[in-house]
Length: 194
Image (tube, rainbow, N blue to C red):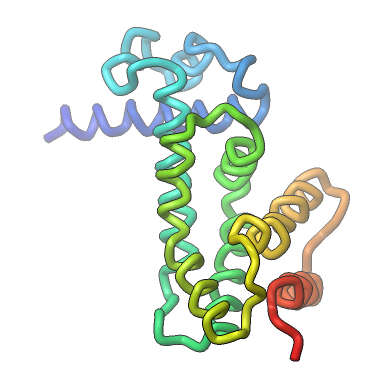
């Protein structure tokens, strides 16, 4: 049992080192040797868990995306009204991005650059299915604008990454009032005005 835990710990250390190094140096300036050194393992150990650097980054992306969406949808119930469901999910996403900055920064980098292969990107999108289903229901009920989910995500969710980065740099501090204002702008960007 101790050997299994040691193996899990090594893999987790590699994932954590990958996130930190990609966040600080970018994908191309993060060689496997640096990842191994930061994780305190031999470079050969990486290949016990991952085929290559691309596989390591893709699998890290999918793991972080799964943790992000698990947190976002944890208390969501599909029977909630559309607006209440969106508000709950949006606030959970905001909470994740502000309290899990390293993971959120990694996702933002991966989502906005071509470092993730298309199969992994599609796997990541599957983790957003409850939000996509909520929007589909909202469109059907005439509550959410009948637009591409990519556009809805860009206007309702992506601004949180900008706010997170601004706070991390010390340029702006998000307080409860700012979060309420940001949510209202997000909701207004996707709701149908009657």
